[in-house]
Image (cartoon, rainbow, N blue to C red; front, side):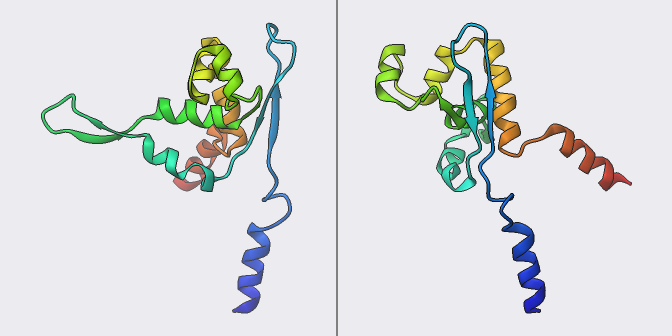
Length: 138
């Protein structure tokens, strides 16, 4: 039993599994690349709760998850350079939050690229998910 537990620990606590993943994206209109890093779930739990909203569009209100807020928030939190959390940077953009800085600084197409890359470095892989679904079907 102890060997099984140690084996499980080694499987999930390997050096590679605990590494922070980094990525860079260079947009032609900026001098420096945008740098993105993975973040852990512990740092996002309170934000996840903020993404649950009450939808009152029908008679029976329901809690729904705001995926746009989630995607933009995770992306803003994953961007290391530029530092969207920097108060002086936010003041220059005329915004108060990292998410607002993300939306103001980047064009729509750039936002989509950054969201996709942030989701990728944080473990959201559409290709891997599709492959897992296919494996499960067989």
